[in-house]
Image (cartoon, rainbow, N blue to C red):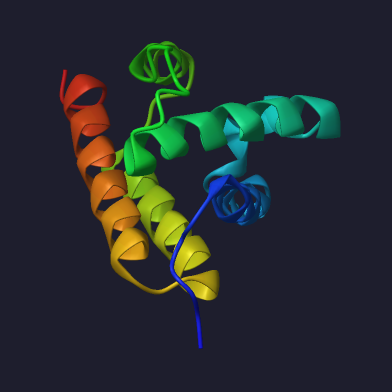
Length: 125
């Protein structure tokens, strides 16, 4: 039986699995090339854990503008609706592989909301 997401270690597992998928996906790897270095990736994963810890558990651990680097990247390598759909599919599968419960559903719902806002601010602008 799968447990629900309970802590930062669980979030690290999710984002690590998620990035493993992104880095090898034929349509997505182009956006994540700078994270092919293990040290750079681990630094980024810790930022993502802070982000999701704040989103899911209201921890106050993330204080950056999450949208700004994505808008900047979009200007160099434009995202399409297809990319957002793949992003969501890979994120959700990374959650579902290890977790089930209210927090698992909440993080997937919040990912959908975030992807929707990012689409509005990037591909729809």
